[in-house]
Image (cartoon, rainbow, N blue to C red; front, side):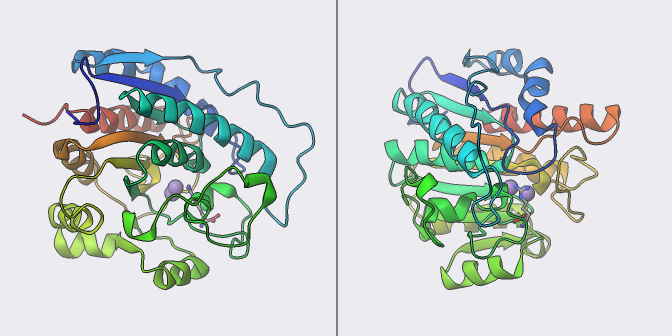
Length: 309
Ligand SMILES: NC(=[NH2+])NCCC[C@H](N)C(=O)O
Ligand SMILES: [Mn+2]
Ligand SMILES: [Mn+2]
């Protein structure tokens, strides 16, 4: 599977019932639905030993008084939960286990990627999303921190003392996006100024997903020797494929394109950490929820080797 995972290959489900990075309730229930849909048994069926520490791992983290900082919402809570997520992910990666973080909203990537990079400073990040999530405190219009995690990891924008534990460990040249189609004006400037490689849906149409993944890997991992952190926001998929998510954007990845990305990353043998975020089971009807949860499980299975013959 991955040269950074020891035998017997072990996956650790990190269930993050967290919604503080955005305003819609329900995204905190994502992990419960994914686990109840049978994810653990499915991964065991692929030959993985699966650890799971339960859904309440981060739930006793409470912040009593959390007024906005500028317009950033729930800043102290987002910071404290992520600090704890970072420690958990770091411990698994250090142990040569594969952490699979189930969100929860995408602000959680502040923690997961910090955890990965503290063990593997040279790891690259492949970010699959309709959005760039690279707003800074200055550029954000929404104040929702799930639209900002990448800027924290890169150390862009004004420093917020409450997030001082986040080290700017990610380098712009070790980051690549696939699936973008809803990027704020300020984010486009940030991407340009920092020379960050991004493959939008336009590129997926133009080159096909096979070439896009190849080019993305050539950019962040030219010798195919660096550890990979895959951060997958389900809203990268078309809303017809994954309807139950907080910020759907039409014109997204097909079912196969999404799975192809996971398979191709698995095939490198370099995966060290995986995030699957923004599944919100309280949005849309029951059939849509079931569909979205099933797709989430199958993306994880593909990243862990299911669809490779
Ligand atoms: N992880 C996500 N779904 N992010 C959506 C971000 C939307 C918008 N760019 C914002 O900053 O608020
Ligand atoms: Mn996202
Ligand atoms: Mn998104």
